[in-house]
Image (cartoon, rainbow, N blue to C red; front, side, top):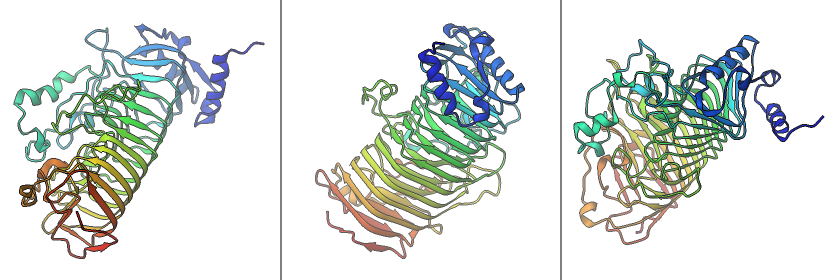
Length: 505
């Protein structure tokens, strides 16, 4: 008997699947009518294969080489979706193809988070309360027919709803980014979405142009994301109200929004903390969209839609009703993007955060930004949160925009507490003036948190205000050109400890 290369590869891939019991039962999507020719709509056939695998007690649905034009694909528990080598799931476009995506859920209160966070079924691939599910293989998800847009939250306290960098935009420009909810009916605005559920594995594949979110996981437990390449037009990986999650060995390029972001919104109707998260050995960047995958790594785009420089970072926030605890970010690389941002502004507590061994090059805003704010986008009674027990170490950041030193910004009467910065080396472009050094930034307690919110800061290496028990150990910094500001500025920072930290310019 002759065994083809494809069958050999498939056999090896099936043996490596995360759920061996599912690997034992194989369902080829072509046996259910999938064509893979890029013309026929194949989502009906793929969904039929998924249903058959589910009815049999679980199995693996295989998509061999081909281009599968699809509307919504509905995942079921105990089913693995295997994207074979050369397999592409292409998001259909309702404006060009006959059909539509599953409609967004009704009865979701979209008061405290935007449309994208409030719905899951209007996605290319979605699962609701599924267990033991995997999407794996070397294939691709191409979200060409998805939209990146959607309306914002119905909460209309305008201070804090949008970044201050967007203040000069007209109503028409805002409306172009945030269309009315009625315009979203039948559209897909996420590549992959999970609501609740547990024991989910995503590995090996590529996402190009993933819509509002390439991956949105809300209320999900036991999620593992490994070895993905994502090159997208808005958010990369959004983890909202999740626990027990590992994200590792991923490459995420997202010039228009955040690359890997942890949130704790009110999308499930209550404040839920994101807990026990590990982000390890990942690359985030803000190259022109598509140029990570094609290898050109172009740098034509200079500004994100919020009119700050390109994004592409790792962030905690902005949605932060439930807070975050027990988060580790380690051995990650940031290139041509904003730096690490740790924010809580909606009443949640951020605690026990460790970030270490981070490398950054061509940093488009601050390399490190810690913010406790008072936006309070949440139900009546939402208070001011807290930031405590944060350790950041072994950071090497170079080519930093001179306007944005590392910043730690609490509030009067609500200090950020027990932060340690250890073994930090920062290289800035330089160019600050004596006028910049004399600036006294406003508090802006209820503003949307971004490093640019305070304008040019009065120091060039580190600025800290309203923090207590701040420890700075072996913090070095330099500028590529002269800077007239002092390297450090501290305001309301009792219990400050400086060790092995030269203060000279």
